[in-house]
Amino acid sequence: MYGPSVMPPQPDGIWEVIRNVLEWKESEGEDRYRRGLYTFMRKSSPYPMAISFDSPSREFCISRRIRTNTPLQALNTMNDTVFVEAARALAQRMNTQENLDAQIALGYTQVSF
Image 1 (tube, rainbow, N blue to C red):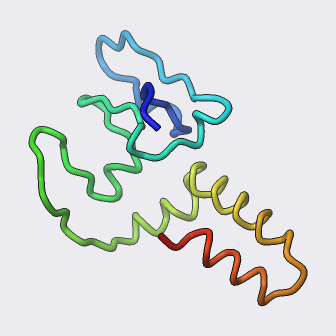
Image 2 (tube, rainbow, N blue to C red; image 1 turned 135 degrees about the vertical axis):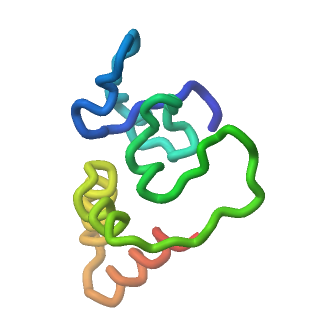
């Protein structure tokens, strides 16, 4: 909990803007898998997944986000490195169980809040 912002994987070229003095260096170790709340944000080139999932611009606080479901969000969850790695880790954890029912139960408990 808490700590500095992290830089999860993102597509190449996102930060290629005029007068770019910062460089996106992917976080390593446990920091690579921190919650999205800790993702480093930049106004001129925000994190692509945040844009796809209609994240607010952070210029002001909002009490409720609009519910959306677009094809771009589906493509993002299927192809983004962060989602692919999370799905792979969940599948490996579920595969430790002996039968299919136990695997499904474990998967459900892992992803439910």
